[in-house]
Image 1 (cartoon, rainbow, N blue to C red):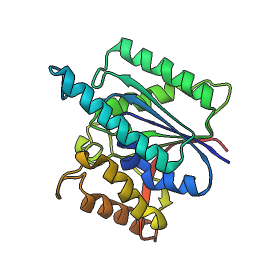
Image 2: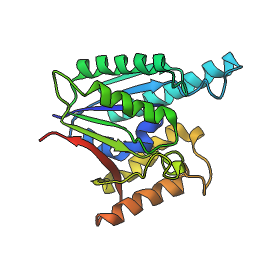
Image 3: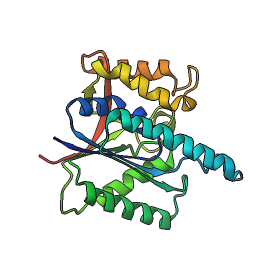
Length: 225
């Protein structure tokens, strides 16, 4: 059994970035743990506390439905203020992630790419890298994923996402689309990147690169052999 830890910014990122791969881990009976770093609501509802609370509960409810479907071992919400890139907030987040990694002792971490427009996504990766520099239980594998409407919208400002690790998800694509329905309020009609048509097309494109019908692609941060 492999211990998996997904460290992502907001509820929905876990499905968009690596939902099919998580379903594969579920089938293999690996231990799946999810850590959500930011609340993802305050930026849209700074002046309306009621709307903020309603949106926060809605996102957490959706995340818990996904977690139940995946039969996760643990789910944790840190609920840090999103879009806050202050030094104090980064230090707080890094300490929280470090503590969580020490508790879970994961073999593999899935997290965001540095080539991403969303500052919360980049902060996640930076904190993961700091947290895993020196650790009593070295993480064997760290892989970064892409998020539709975020990674590609950076337009190479932070570098180009260069996938070099692919996971075949042919038998899991239908279940991934089912998981996405738990976050249906985050989806919009095509040609918006977070549309069912585009997400399917992206999985097909990734699969065609490695000779399969559907795949999810990642960028290797490190692999300890």
